Image (cartoon, rainbow, N blue to C red):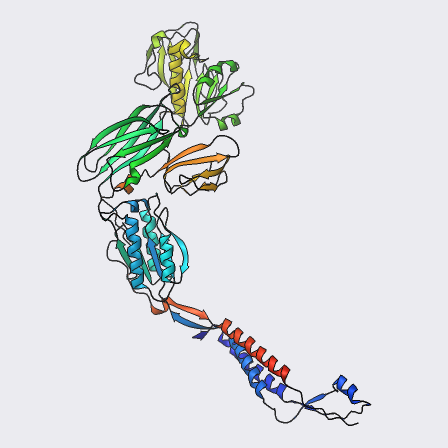
Length: 604
């Protein structure tokens, strides 16, 4: 027990004499002549008091003295100290804890039961704090006062579909074990802790090596603008002690679409390609044979992840862009050169400049069709021609793939002289007819003939070349792999509500970071207007799927024992003193009110 402000007790030196002085005041009678006793009683009679003689201490003096002492003591802020045993419980709720054990329970259920048993053994007076590890370590329950509350809080927790971060988990355990807030830290999970452990830490390891087969990434891509199907690639892994043939079946919107298989050695990671998947909104891949960790045997992808391509077409003859709008996944905006502004490129994925060039390097991939010579940005040197013959082309090359150049006859255009940073791809008899290069991190192509307007099957050789050019500039060959559980992503513009795979709806603001991504499956993004967007989120973490080799954590917390005063708790006594003061004051007032005053001597 102690006082926070012991100097306040000096106030008693002045307060007690003042109280004694008040009790030295004596009431003395005064002779008064009145015409009627009734009038005197109505006036109660004037009284006079004087300080004289010895003080008369009655019971009220001692009550008021006690009140005074209690008030001064309350100002000094007294407190009592009690020995505490605060405990931090760290429960691993990461995706790997969904794995089933030989007993039939999941790792998470076993960890929760063993953590509750350990708490019953360790618990003494003190608060209990509950932490979970995924997607990031954080406390999920306010300090709990009883074992029953702690058990109830643990019973409300469920494992999520996101992996934990071993580095972040190690830092959290270090902070809990080395800080002054907890006398004991109990961790239950599948990560073993390397010895020696800090004295405050107790580790409960559940599980053990489990054979597992897993799907890693599930990627979709569109090979070209003309393609009506999608190409899929999946990574698969055999985390088992024996060679295994793994099979993957893909369905689209609930319809079986394709299947394939591969034989993998123990610990081997392979891939499966599906070159021609019919279009669907939602794709689901399922891996067989089954194992004790079903979460990574399923993965999702959405066709909406293949974004549409926005083309800005700058030309004095905007009608040349008409055929591009018929391509799937393409939107086209046209501008005349005198109307063009660099700000127009902000919403474009690629730009086409026909008979014109920008005044500065464009911030997007661009196609320059028959550019004028002598501009200061690109510095083309050209020679016009009326009829030309293609004499050679670079192969293999994504720009020339599947193009029959013998059927292409450029009738009017220009040859390019040697360029400082663009390389020839297609040549004619007097120079280059098509060049490609990169500048400022963007792809640039220049053609000495005009492939527009796009005519499709009416001019198939030129159309194939045009599609190659656009596909290369739009980088369609890049895989789209979706998102991973536990990783936040910004809310797209116009989206106000997101529906989780569990069908729980969350109101969101465009541009804000969305963090509720701990469920695997398809998320629906909706706004006030427009169709819903679909977004696939998968575990897609082969390190978390390798249940044969769970990494051990090494803690850096101090190995010394904590001092006894480190886990004591101050309990303020001010409230109790104030209640006692009020009770004494109320009792004194009630007794004094009931007490009859002495008779007054009256002379008439």
